Image (cartoon, rainbow, N blue to C red; front, side, top):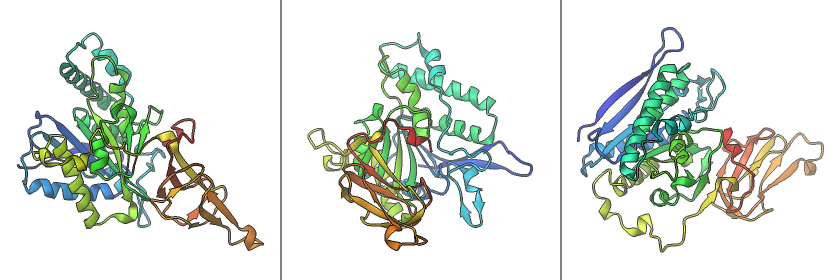
Length: 381
């Protein structure tokens, strides 16, 4: 099937500049189900864009019929792509205002609720159509009022994805295992995605004030949960390992896994060939899914050089030393070392790639089945 490439311009913020989003589409735009995939919202996280490059090549090969509609945005943040400082892309935070590119998406839940209440019926499919129309209308109004290029970018990404049945936002850690962030509203419905991606852990989220892309996409559906609605857009944040794992071999593997997700979700033909051993069954032991409050962030109490004691993927226990933090300027070398320990039993799934930590820096992350923090406030960074 022919791929259509579209470009959506962003409003220029200075003279003589212009940026745009490049979107690759397959299938009838009115066909369902629709899948939306984006990468590089944190512009320097390149595992997602490279995986989507290989997914596009796979779809172009035309192995299987496209039954629905697929929309792919390989580079979801051309603003961050332009923030190159002395050879290094600084694409997580905006230079213009310091905001995190994957925070501050508009919360339109209340506006959508007001627009559809009174029109909802006992027909879940009709309710989904009504919701998507209302979300699209609200976002169109917001686009006309966008004050900055970044605001317009965030709204445009939501407009591209708002009528999707499945939306995947691809990121990566500094060093990490494959893992997901999924709203509790969409679990265990997303468990097949976790299995097909070979995710080691899924962090289950609830509403916060952060308004990441996945939270903003889910918020309208959560607002009206229980009013004759299904979850109309299953949105997940996918962390594809670490920044140093970017390369064709792993990207091809990830593209193959994304392709199988499209098949299993009925967007591409061939889903019936995916066996239960890949997507799992209700009789199997549950996936490792833990509350996001179970994320134990091991932080540096002082500056120092990091020497890790255990590799990624280690099952650790509460109190176990994870790393040493070393101050080579200490008068007594014996006193220039601090043990950094896990606060709980769990899986060490992410680490800092730089081997120096400033005070307060996250050195490693452990996923625990019990809450470690009171809230999800750490997702605001």
